[in-house]
Length: 289
Image 1: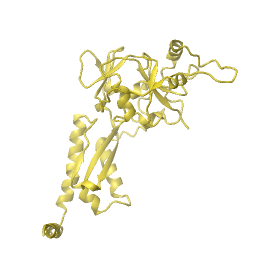
Image 2: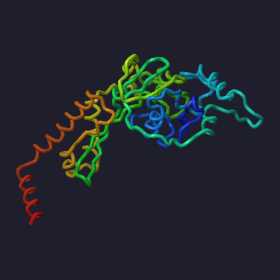
Image 3: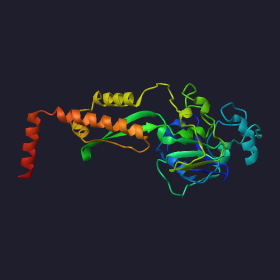
Image 4: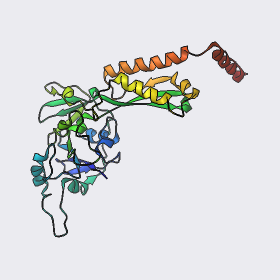
């Protein structure tokens, strides 16, 4: 089944209910509902938030396991002591019993995450793109390019990665950095603040170490679409109205993506034969009449 995570706050001793997929890599991406919720809860408000895995206890080995005894003592639990029924209490079990519904404002695609304890920060928009997806919207005769990125801060506050299925792969780029902010006071903002050291380039994540550039990712997605069984002239018409969902993208990413969609649209428009254009004009004339 793999390892499940919840979204805990050591300061409030509560966790936030979320349902975007309980396994780590099902939800730890920029723009996911639970990441927006968790990091909105600490917008301009430093608190000790973590993603806590249900396999994490003081007997396991993972990044941050040296902190487990202190966390459990603070919560008044012991994961290494079993009762007469063979049960023990983990951090996951504790926070599952103290789960609440988040009723605050959700701020999607927050750009910066800060570690107030270590005086570090990351620019979430500068994380490496990991995949692309072209959404064909037939009802509006257009297509939209979406880019997926791992949520950098969500990775840094994960407690228990590597203990179960669905976790970030142990051979992935910077796997040893997952969880290095656990127990620290974290806050988010859309403002770039001074006096914090930028570690963004030190925590680039690539789960399968494919080292693909954004241009290669875009070409791969375009080829996937063209080679799929459903691709036909309708999709080419939609690609003539091709745009980019720029949320979560760095300025450099936006330039690359916009150049790509313009190139795709332009090539399709230019390849339209004079006969096709004439047929289209006749069709428009018939519709007006």
